[in-house]
Amino acid sequence: MKKKLDMLEELQEVDQQIDALKAAQSGLQAELSGINQGVEAAREEIAILETSLTQLETEKAGLEAIHVAEMENIVRSETNMKEIKTNKEFQAVGREIAAARKQVTDIEEQLLQKISQIEELSGDLAAKKSKCDELAENSAQRIVAKQAEIDKIQSDIDTDIDRRESVTKELPASLVKKFTILREQRRGHALAIARDGYCMGCNMHLPPQLYNNLYKYEELLACPHCQRILILKLQQQ
View 1 (tube, one colour):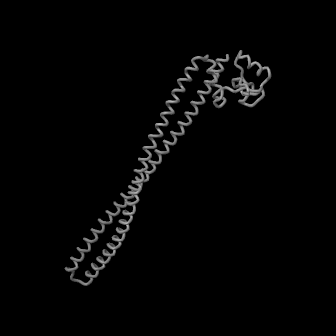
View 2: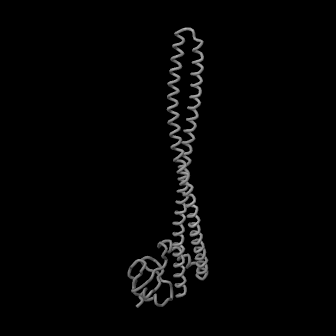
View 3: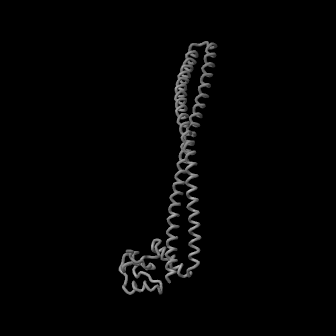
């Protein structure tokens, strides 16, 4: 029975080590996800700026087309004025030309604004792209390093799983099942140390006869309070 208890203790140790490794691996994977999200966020920001820049350039092209059309109208109207014979018609065309020139002035002001916005946005976009490229390069290096850590931990987990399987093969299936259920119910601790008459798992006092029976190693004994399997550990002097 002492051998079984030793093997159960080893099994709990291996399981706790696997749990710790998986927790560390999960943390690294979260960091890896955060690195990827940082790069994706930067790229999304660039995509938004590029869309805005395309929109501004489209609006600028539209204004330029209107500007050309209005200038052509002015030239055509000025040409037509040479053939006008009545003062009334001359004044009407003159008003059209004046209105067209005012519109041309307004369009030119809008064009200047668009050009200024495009230049500013282009500068921002270039800076963002440069930072994004730098971030992507640094992130790639970090990703490689994090993935190497994750892979190393996975290798350690696989080694511990093999060790666990070798231990469980030496134990009765019913005992392994009981151990597994207790471990799930007691937050990873199916076993508890018994010392000085107490269960160290729940800090409750053990019945004297039960505690004395632990010295005999005749059977597996459990704490009547927390149901963990008890392992006798005497106080070291």
